[in-house]
Length: 238
Image (tube, rainbow, N blue to C red; front, side, top):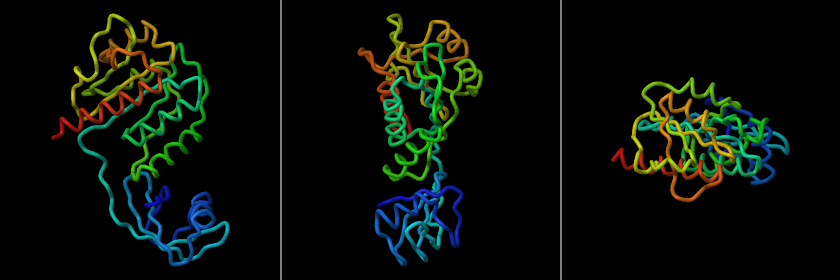
């Protein structure tokens, strides 16, 4: 199945966005009468029939197939410091989307080595990963957020964790995870969180955790955490 992404789509006659139209007509060689599978990033699955096609434009007649409910057993927010290498952070965005994440917050910490990010570029990575993994939900992407601001916004009744490489921490995520509806996990920059940042997170209810005996890169730790939580939540829901 080849998915197309059209936000704010509705039933009826719709003109595809330029990039999706080009992909359908020029890359995949779709023609009038061919059908397309479309998602809106908000759980909507649509079937569309091409009614008009040119090199730059593609018009379709759209019908709603189903509205998929957001998974009900948990909501995961991954707050991760952008890496110095943009490719590595984009790799995390891609893999976390494929695994399943609801909200991604680029986290600005004292030791963050990338002070500016391009949300438009990151959003394209999320869209591509959503389509590739045949999902109808696109993760919510937040702007670069200072860690004190993020900590203040952690909702009540949330299982919140902060990954920390300090030798004094001996609480692996896999053995200390609490399966609840809202889960938040913070992953720090390549130089790790400062003791002050961890202290503030602890005061806000975040439990320091480790992801195993090996020291992981930021993007690796974030993907490992995303997958670990997905598995633990799945087991808890059975």
